[in-house]
Length: 214
Length: 214
DNA sequence: GTCAACTTACTATCAAGTAAGTAAGTAACG
DNA sequence: CGTTACTTACTTACTTGATAGTAAGTTGAC
Image (cartoon, rainbow over all chains, first blue to last red):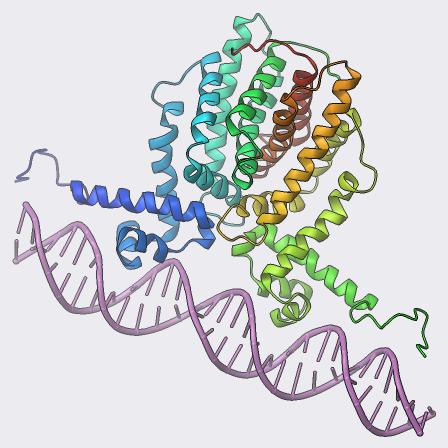
C-alpha cells in the first residue's frame, strides 16, 4: 500500500527537497530576525532571501510566531545540541567547552546576534519566544551547576549555595559580553574576556577566599 | 527693553508646564518601550498613557526615533548620572556601588527591562539607539577600568592588561543576569548573583592566582 | 489524479508622519 | 488697559505604506 521504502504510513512533509527548503527558510529567518529582531523583521524579507513570496513561508510554517519557534528549536539542535543531549562535557571540561564556544562565537556574529536580540526581546509582553528562553536558561544553569558540583567534589569543597549564583553568572557574563562585542568588536575581545571571567568565577567557587568587598 | 528678568532672548520651550508634560511622555515611553521594545511599541500606546493623541507626541519630539534618543539620555541623566558626573565613587567604592545598584534594580523591573530590551535591540540594523549604547558601554568600561587601576595600585599589583577584560566582564555579568532575572525572577537572585560575580572578578584581578583551566 | 508546493490577489489592520485648524497663552504697543 | 500679532500645545483628519494572514488557483511530481 505504502509504495515507498519505509513501510510506515506516508508522512506528508518529509520529501528531501521540502526539508531542504524549510532549512533554507529557517536559515534566512535566523539572519533576518538577527539583523532586525522579531518585531522588526518581516516575512517579506525572509521570503526574498530564499526566492519566494511571503505566502510561501506561511504555507510551510503557518504563522510568523510559529516560524520563530521553529527557528529557535532548530538552531538549538544544530548549534547547542552538544551541550544538552549529545556529549555533555562534565566537570571542568564543561567550562573549557564554554570558553571554546566563546572563541568560536567571535567568528559567528550572525548567530550570536540572533540569540542576543531574540533573548532580550523575549522578555517583552507576549513574546512567542519567552518560554523557550526561560526553559533554555533553566536547562543551561542546571548543566553548569552539575559541572560545579563535580568540580567541587574533586576539590574537596562542600558544594556551597554559591553554585547557583555562579551558574547564572557564567551564562550571564557570556551573554553580556556578546552585546558589548556586537556593539564594538574592536573594544571587546569576546573570547579572552569570556575566558577571564569564567576562570574568575570558577576560581571563586572552588576557593573559599574572603571577599575584598566585605 | 526686555521687560522680564533675563534680558536674554526669549527661550521658546521652557514653560514649566510644558517641561512637565514632556517628562510625562518620556516616562510613558520608557514603560512602553520597555514592555514592547522600540520596534514593537507604538506612539499610540504612549499617547494613550499620557492622555493625548500620537500627533501630540510628535509635536513635542518630532519623530519616534528622536523620542527614543531623548528617552535614553533623559533616563541616563536621571538614573546613572551619579556614575558619570556627580560623585563618581572611586576604587573599591565603585564596585560596592555597582553591587548596591544591582540590589536596587531588583525592585525596579520596569527600568531594568527597558535597558535590557533597548540595549540588545540596539545592535540591530540602523537602530537609532546604537550609538548611544556604544558610547555608554565605552564610558562605563572606562570608569570601571579606572577603579581597577586604583585598586590595583592599592594592592601593589602592577595594573595588568586583565583590567580591560575584567571591566567588560563586570558590566556584562550585570546585564546578563538582568535578562535571566526578568525571564524568571524566582530562579535568579539578581542582587546576590551580581555581588558574587563582581567579587569573583575583582578578586581575580587583584590576585594573580594561577588558572584552574590552564 | 491527487497532493504538496507554491503564486497571485486580496483583505484588514495598523503604523508613522503630515497638514491644517483651533484654543489658549504671551508679548508688544498705543 | 486692551487690541493686535504671534507662539505654543495640541486635535482631527488624512496620506502613505507596510504587514500578517487568507483564499483560491496553478503547476509539477509521483
